[in-house]
Image (cartoon, rainbow, N blue to C red; front, side):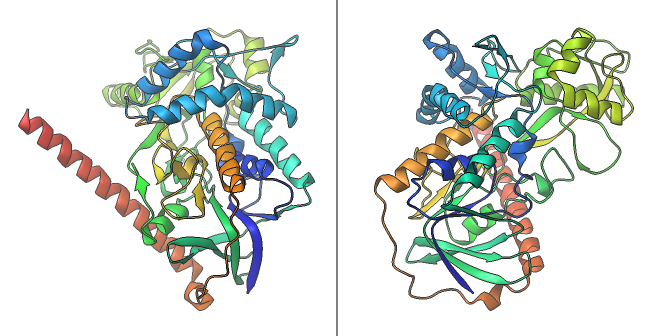
Length: 438
């Protein structure tokens, strides 16, 4: 019924794994994950990871990130991310991550919203390359235990301090795991949407738990739609057609196979233009043509996309493919400071679960993996820099309250969707008031 660990991390995406690897090995770490360890959205990331190549690109990179976020970004967080990027890449390479190179030099690609090529990549499966290597290193550590098919049902709170989590194991048993520090790295909320690029089991549980414990959240209505996912009549997870395809020259066409937009606009603006064209054409998709990209480059740089398109009946080296916008990323989340600490003591949030302000209202392409890793490392350094062991809480929650896990999941979904809608309405009313006053 009860377990004890030094640090519990919820989630096996890039953020959770990197955090675990940056915590000293004298601490016992337990990582729990709702599904298989490999089934995190980090594994699905195709395009790449941004890096500051040299000082001459700093102002441009900073401005691209701010402009994409409609200048609602937290400046301090953006600066920290960019300045830490080269260090993070060095760490990834040391962990065995391989990025595309020409000889000894890195190759860089460009995506929408970027003024210059500054994105490192591994074919079209960069997220898989990074996250799988981190997972390999985690499994080598004797101080780290991974528990799969284990759902967080709640956190344990005593006097405004987090003391761990309540969880449901694969066998259906409910356990309380106490910990000195708790890290929420549960991913986003794509599973709440009918059409999303996310895994279906990622449903924003941590957000509902935060709301129930009065932990500060921010911008829950900031949901990013990716403009190009492979069209299908079937509901469920959409296959992403990476933005780097357009960065390498692919173009968007209307039903008459005419180009209608600048393909490298920021994602929210491009999504709006694609939807307008779909409505104008009275079509459920637009066309994406890779004709400007040499065939050998498509097969070499985008082998996974090429293979998936063939499976769906399209040879993207010879013909257009149908694409449609779908929910992709979550810019809001549990509000954290520059060290990823939430408004509750001894509770951190990292990755897509958190909102540190880097992305503002709209994320710049390929900033997500970098942001996750930078602030995951900061959380690890912060908690261990002044490590404080907690006494056992006076009262542990009754596990009987959590027996009906399906009802809890349903309640969490409803709470998160209701809060998103409430924030949308509040933002709309505020905008209308400003317009009337002007």
